[in-house]
Image (tube, rainbow, N blue to C red; front, side, top):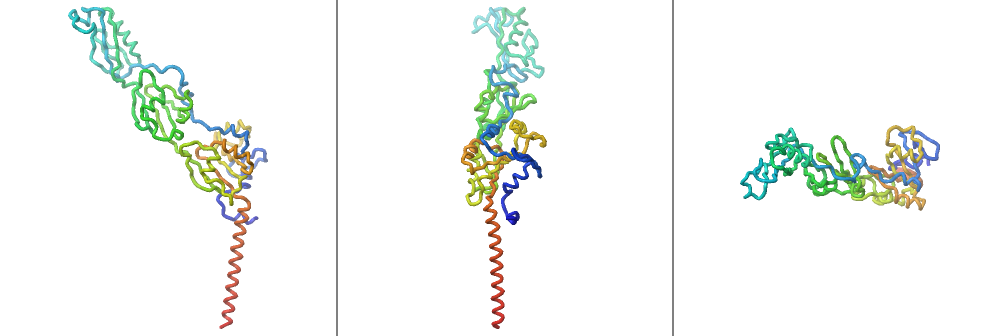
Length: 382
């Protein structure tokens, strides 16, 4: 058996993994090489390994409930100003206005300039940027009250240039959209941009607003209405797909990088996609899942992580699939992006390798000695 250490294999055996763990829960601590924590998969452990989310839009920008942000005029907006008077003969409506459809006058469309103002005859320059149209209307009415006959003013937004949001990335029609006065949420503007061009379970939505940023998985945005917050003028929404993969090594049917594709996977499903365990090689009691785990998760599990630095700690989870109950556990353990699955060889496989080498060596020696004897016999014959 000592010769088995020299035999080829696709990775470490279970004894190596166990002996080199930085921390073994329930066993004497050992420290060899890079520290990691070895956890045996149990039912009580599953609650600590729920699917982890990304940063929240709700936490960063406020809850999805409540009213939409108020629409205000801004620099670049094109507005139309109409002024009504109660009778003819006023400042804007002449005496002969009886032939007109109404006692009002409409000023030419004008753009809110870089100083944020518009111009109204006899009222002067009016600050419009940053104010709702109703406030601008009331100010114009106040300034014309001593000149016009009971003036009433209507300010209408003709072309919305300031209240826009950009939608970029993996959508069908990346664009810059003017916001509706009724208010729009993240999913609304993504829909107006043609929807996603990638699978939702692998797509992340990032909202950028005045130096702040939040990211959420698109499927979480669908499932949690509180994450679907109102957008504000000037927001940028970036949609991007992050292809999720895991690696499979050892005595599994398929070794290499494997895609999650368009679904979330459990450890059981990931093993199945990797071809399962090879019946002639694998040790079903030694199936290992390698993952970086948040320090806070291990602290909640009351694991001593004082020797580790950083927020992410290397962890190896061992599943004993000789136990029938473990099959239920691995159906509930979610896989994470960039996980590694390693299936160790059985001890009998290592012994068989050694015996094959011994057989090859002794067989070759026997053939060689036979050739020598035949050669000597042939020489005597001559």
